[in-house]
Length: 196
Ligand SMILES: *[C@@H]1O[C@H](CO)[C@@H](O)[C@H](O)[C@H]1NC(C)=O
Image 1 (cartoon, helix red, strand yellow):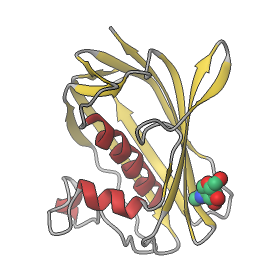
Image 2: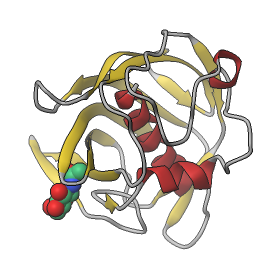
Image 3: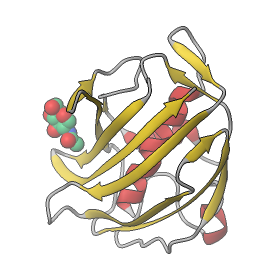
Image 4: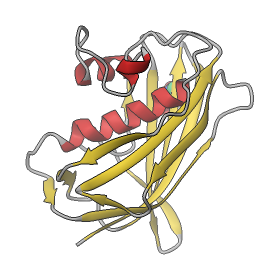
C-alpha cells in the first residue's frame, strides 16, 4: 500500500502544482505523456513496496482519459510525519540532469506527505473513487499489511498549468518516503512529455 501512497503523493504533488496558476506557469492545451514506466528503487527490506502499477493508454493525452490501477503493501503503519524526498531529472544530451526545487515542484523535500494529502483531501471529505467504494484510505495513517486489489479506474485529465521549465523531453522522478530517519520505500517513474 505504501508505494501506492508514494504514487498518490507524487501525483498529489503534481496536482497541487498544476492547480495554482501564477507567474511561472503555463496553460497546456495539448500534451502527450508516453513511455511511462516504474520500479521500486529502495532497499530489499524496505517495508513499503509497490506491486503493480499500470497506466494506459500510451501515449496519454492531456486533456484526455486515463485508466490506471495500482497495488502495494506495507509491513509497518505509515503515519505522520512521513518525509518525502523527490528527485526530478531531465535527460539532456544523454545525461540525467537534476531539476532544482522551484515553487515546490522539482527536486524537493517535503516534511510531511500526510500533510499534503490532508490539504488535497481535507479530513472529513470522502476519499476519491474507487478508494471510497472499497473502503480504502487516502490519508494517514495507512495500516500495516494493507493490500490494494488492482482496480482499473478511469480518470479524466483536464487542461493543466505546468511550470514553464517543464519542456518536452524524457523525465525521471524518484520519490523516497521515510520516517524517523528510516527509509520506508522508494519509487521511480520515467516518462516522456511532449506538448505542442
Ligand atoms: C531527505 O533528504 C535529506 C537531506 O539529504 C535527508 O537528511 C533525509 O534523510 C532524506 N529523507 C528521506 C526520506 O530520504
